[in-house]
Image (cartoon, rainbow, N blue to C red; front, side, top):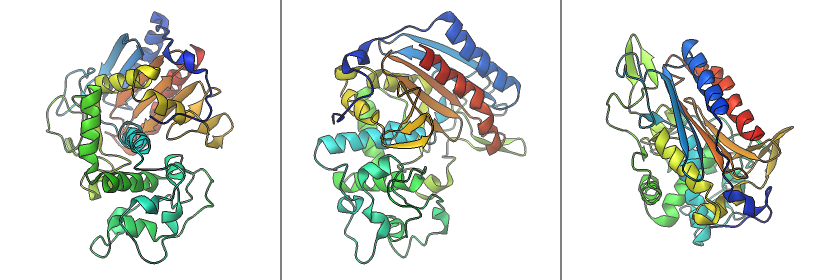
Length: 356
């Protein structure tokens, strides 16, 4: 995979694994139980693990009060929302760059079907799209697009930019374009490309939706005492795209996300190790103390990389200590505002890894 020009940590430290203490895992479990008790989410799962495969799994609450009254576990499948960016699109871009199919500093239009006329948003580079510094429009409403007029990539690319390239702003449409570019250069749908990757990594229960409804699948939205969204993608833009998009659409259990984290933290023992090092190179400042790498948010002086998902999911990595924390919840089940209230659990995960 691609190697970074510079790293925030010595490469040799990537393989050191520091086990979690009982106090650390108990603290995270307490934070999870508190948000469940406060009605923030029906339930959830936290996995504390290391690159060496040590895992501590803690859960609380129920999968759903309607369709899954049992306690969730590491095999319960959740809509991971924007974790799609770093579990599907980001690693696939790394593979495509390594294979010479994409180039980080080339305009994305070079990797999409030919387009005629002015295409301002097609001038963004792959690096800018990965790091949310493209300047593209931030608001995305694909339901307002006339997809019978032009292909989706043209409709996005013909739009004017909102900011100067290099300005950081979180933008879903950038990852939508990356997903379309991956499908074009490979001549294969994005979900099929991702399925091959996940199979190689041993993530057997990770897939783009829809997924079959069952008590082990966590619903994301209820209405009038029923689970309205159950096994179907919660993100409306991904839904317009049939559930397969570069920014959202993936379903996964905590166990598979833990497996993924272990591969990322394995350093040179994993095909993803080099690409993670590239991801840890700061590309832009989000705010004081937070930097944007390629895909990932970098915190605690660059020692922790993390990403969140709208539905109430998170993945935190500490490469220098070989530790990670996976969080999966369906915090949007009782309304989108609840997802903000899981912040104490996410903050606890960040502080735990930063202190370790």
